[in-house]
Structure formats: structure tokens, C-alpha cells
Image: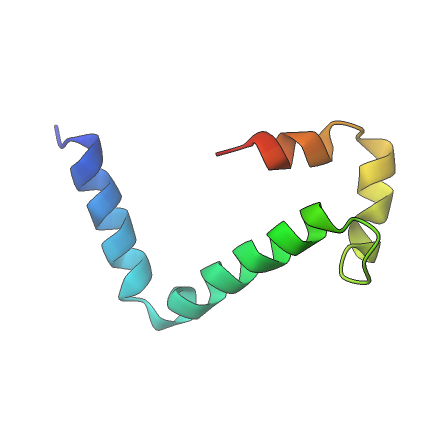
Length: 65
């Protein structure tokens, strides 16, 4: 069984050596952070109905590691 640090290294290696994910993942994380920090922004408008339906969605996304 491999250690968790070895698994993390393998996952990071996969992400960094795949050109699509090398650019897409950081951009999606930045967009998610922007939506969470500015829920009234134009980028967050499509997510607005979910914020209203699921009251704990924003808190859950902020609190997730």
C-alpha cells in the first residue's frame, strides 16, 4: 500500500503533465473563489438559484478543504 504523500505526488504529477488540466484546474479554482467571495457578481448569477435553494451550499463550499 502506498503512503498518502506518494498518492498526492502521483495525483499532482498527473495534473501537471496533462496540459488541459494544467490550465483548466487553476482557472476553475479561481472562478469558484470569485463566486464564493462575491455572490452578487455577474459570474455568480447562474449559481444564484442554488444559493437560495440550498442555504448551506456556500458555507459548505467555503469550509471544504
